[in-house]
Length: 491
Image (cartoon, rainbow, N blue to C red; front, side, top):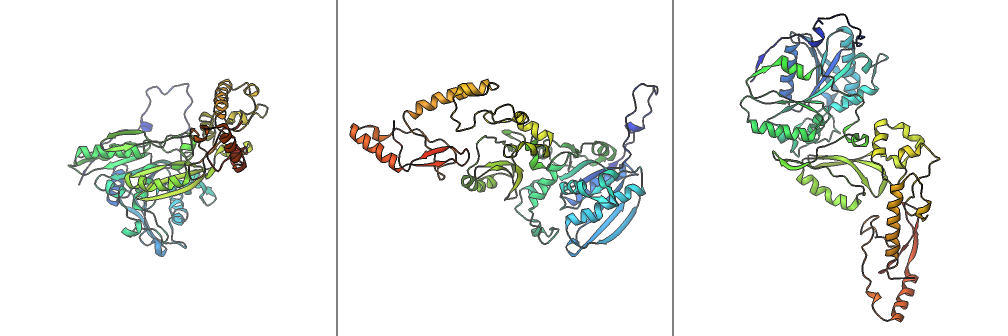
């Protein structure tokens, strides 16, 4: 048990300037109440943190919901301050689900309290199984009495509380929420580890709640693990002392303005060029993190066979995939708790017409332009139709006719053309079949039929030309020779 210690000092906006006369225009003050969203899988740690924040500021109002009866359409709402309980109401919902609870009661309650208690900030304490990203997604489209939620309140930060004693066990647990009787609805099949990682990864601040006398090495290892999961989050450690300074904790957590409303979901961060992980293959406190990037697509069958090994030896995986069987679609990939999920993030920009690129964010277009393949038309070039595109794969124009605005590409393709002509003197164009790989050049093999008399070689060439077929390549449209037997030299 921690003992509460309260320290008082003037807030930054309460300090009086020694020189009130200045030529600088005052910064407009946001009059909307600030909302701090508090989440976590450990109910005791979350409630202790909420109580500490209420003690530090007696004007703060906390809102929390009990979803125990949600499957039966009943939700219990409690509104309290440090001094008293202001409301305790049972709410009946038509549809017992988390999203309905957010739209029909949680967000309208925040708007109502902001109107009834102007000038007082709010603390939204989420239930155990509610992910903070669901709150952020609901705020975008929710309207209360004709007013958008974001016009009535300002979401200041999303804070996740991590219990140092139980976090690692929950992260490595193969249990589902249903196994612990925590599922919010009959169709809620989420895993415990999935909820835990989503709460940490979406937050901008992580509070590490530890008991007095906890091992400092274990706390440091936990901090390293949280940094690998959410490198963008600020960590606040309550320490192992039996005393807790509530005011210092409140200063580090509230009023920070760390929440970015324009931040995309976790799986869409990489599309906008934002980091999604830390590449640290070294064993730091027993935690290893690897970031894998490649310009070649995954073979669907090989990827499927490798997923079992990945999920067995890792706690968490996430990112986006380029799969050869769906070359135009960006695939979202994540796993936690032994379960794997794949979904669509939409089309790659290269698969969209230029007039639809404005539907995406400026950050995504900029990130695509910086990481664009040099053999394809770049985003900046698509905006200027008068500039010809570099030679696509399979285009048989000579290097002298290549666009002049790509000198480096011209030199690269000249070298490629010379090497190709040298190889074609020995072997025809040959591509691997689907069971060997996708869009991968075959290894140059020495043909055993090149050794022998001239008549045998001519007979072999005639037989080879009779057996080969010509098929168009699915991606480039170029007609290629596909041979059923080993390739041989032909004039």
